Image (cartoon, rainbow, N blue to C red; front, side, top):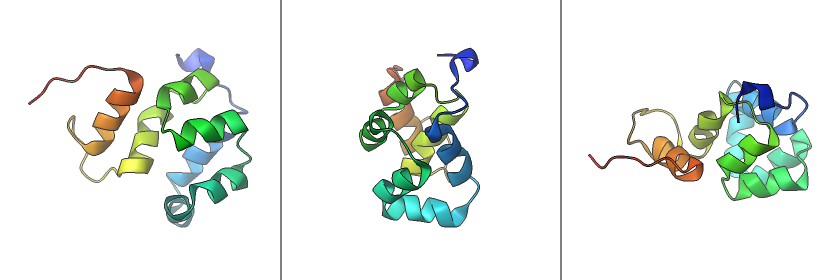
Length: 102
């Protein structure tokens, strides 16, 4: 799951890119993920992965590696970024990364 596996045509890539930059679209995503997925034309497998917060599954579909941790921030927020933040824990859990307890 490296950069060479990125599918530039995958709607999830465009969705992550735009949600990170457009506050209004991000707020809409927070309020109604289904409408956001419809707006971006996500396939049913993508939609299921988003519903399950399946970051590894999205990586396997071709989401750009840079966007993978950004997905956890879309769900858990990114205002307090550190290795033990809710977003970091979600990313580690979904990617099967063992975290040290501190």
